[in-house]
Length: 157
Image (cartoon, rainbow, N blue to C red; front, side, top):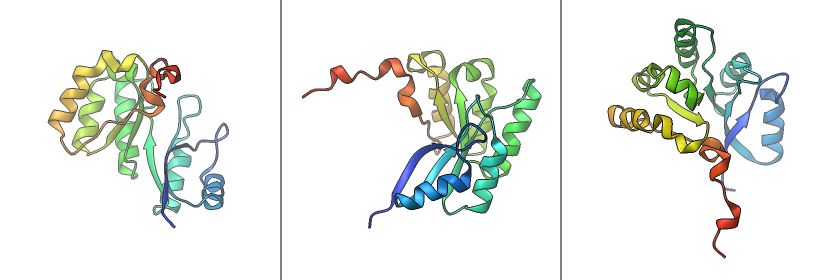
């Protein structure tokens, strides 16, 4: 049987699944591994950390910038990357406000999983600079880089 990898699953309590609940669903559907993340509506990085520590062969995690001040945000990112997260689910507007996040991620070999809209026009130059400065890094755009760019009526027949 071919391995199935889930590209993006929310793990965060109490709004989303726990790591254990996601494992049951994965096993029932023959999914070998999943990238797990949280969201600003439920920023449970502890459940992400617990999941990758307990099941490193099954989960990769993308954290979240959390904190009130620039120092708290950067310290939180460092802690998440130190605990084994491979990147961050980050809003494009957060990168406009805190562009140094990309440098921190690049130096650590971490990947941004960008959420936002407008095709990331507001940070396109920053993303290009990130990719040029850190060629082993990648940029991911879950949610199709913004819902307004998904046009099912434009799909050729």
